[in-house]
Image (cartoon, rainbow, N blue to C red; front, side, top):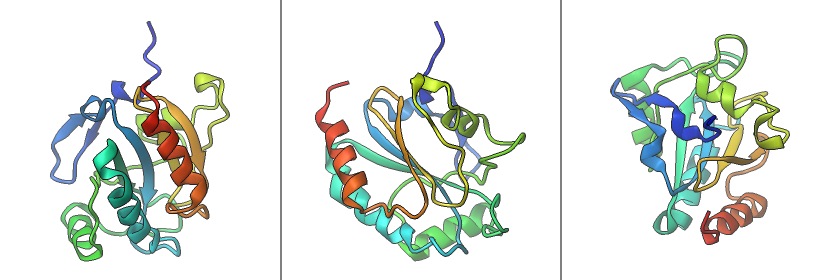
Length: 166
């Protein structure tokens, strides 16, 4: 059986420790590629607000810093952790990865696979591209960077997934 969930992937935390995404089983997730020096960087605060709104209902945000777009993430490891602390980030931020192209991290190759689940998924075109993941670990939707994390469009879809038992 082919695993079409994100739970097949291991990811690296900022401290270098590897974890499996199955640690987030039964949670609704928003996976976002971030950057500290991007015009969309203010969305970090909106992601914090979104997490606060849904955190007690089984919702989590997973942030993956990436330097794939305009060199807007020059920070590494401990520098990223310090930046996140300054900005009040309240969700897991992982090791910096590539999110597009032939060297993309396997997780992002999976997230952007257009054939997956019969849905039309999208390769990130810039920082702060967002993927919405169901409790079963399936990609259910994606949002372009200009869609703010606190938009009613994203909040309604998260609420719907949280109320669903699958």
